Figure 1 (spheres, rainbow, N blue to C red):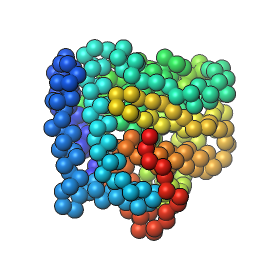
Figure 2 (cartoon, helix red, strand yellow):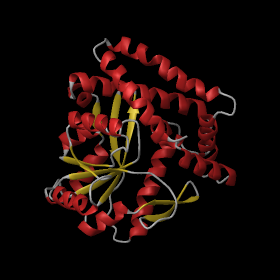
Figure 3 (cartoon, helix red, strand yellow):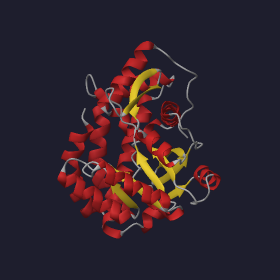
Length: 312
């Protein structure tokens, strides 16, 4: 499954649907999206289902026994996120801000690292509520998003439209010269901004990757967070975005200053793994083909640590 091709295909249509249902009562909006959610849930029961196999491998790897509840709630989170985006486009961000909260864990880390007297980097994985949470974060502590814009021009235009409505500043990285990107990051950090990066992609070994371990498997994680943190002498704070119904919550792990790139990268990777084990329904990117292969290999090795607690 290629998430990029799926998102490129469905994003424009979902946007048009969202523009219509955003003006409806909330119950009617949920009803309009129900066929999409139902189709997603039904795919779990297809013969040789890719999603059932992937979530099943996650459960075998982590010692859990609830693959269907995990996947069912994952699809519900997608519906809630879609409704948030629809209302945002039509009515602005006021309701989104009301339904997003900042966990005390981030407030503690922000206080510990100087309350904006120096730059901070928050790293979060790809979650259903990742972009949506940035509006509330920007109200709490001025934020700048590092955005790797989609290759699809249509989806790129939609993404930028939504980010502008949510409110934080942003830095585009895909089609911008690297030197310009670094200057923009330096400027944001100098101004005490919280720079937010979204990353949990894995791939082949390359010049800008570092070998790390997750779910007992060796993977190659992006090196840029460690490089930026070391260059500007700023802390990395690993974070995660949870959804409980309409409520979106940004929480964080303990931040750190680490000059060794390998140790720094492994530290945020391990933090992400902890969050994935606790809140798998918020980790939609589990279904990406690269993560699916990692989970399959992990399940095959039968390395099962202490069972994770159920989602709360």
